[in-house]
Image 1 (cartoon, one colour):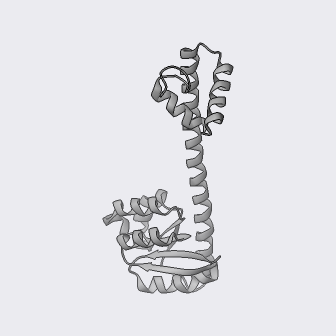
Image 2: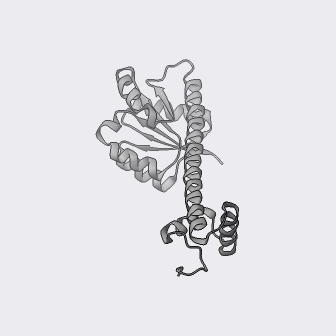
Image 3: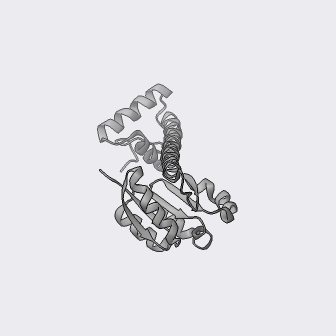
Length: 196
């Protein structure tokens, strides 16, 4: 399957250069947008594998940028010239890679390839971090729910955990979902008094 990219900006020379170079990096389809609103619509419709965005667009439309990131989890490369180094630094944390433009004649394909690799790696790390945060949050909820079950049912920690696991398996739901229900119900397990 060929990779796809969304390129958002108004620098026609830069866009032309990137359209020449991206196929050398495995990107076969490139959608073009001149503004973040259209970029968001294209990203939602096509779910590109990569987003390249001129950094100056973020100053005027940071809300649209947040929408773009929310609708499409693709790696994001911010593009900017030497005069925009300050902006690139300000928004670096929101990007997966930075690419200085205009691209030089020599080694431009290598620079784009390095930015692509960096963006994909950083994006994978962001996803792993999000998964870890979710797992930690769920673990905390399970521990809190287990504590409530121990108190309300007068069970040991191990008994409460086994009981919760049995209930989750019997209802074919995750332990995290069961924990949410227990916390909402104040520590009472399904099938016991007080549960719907």
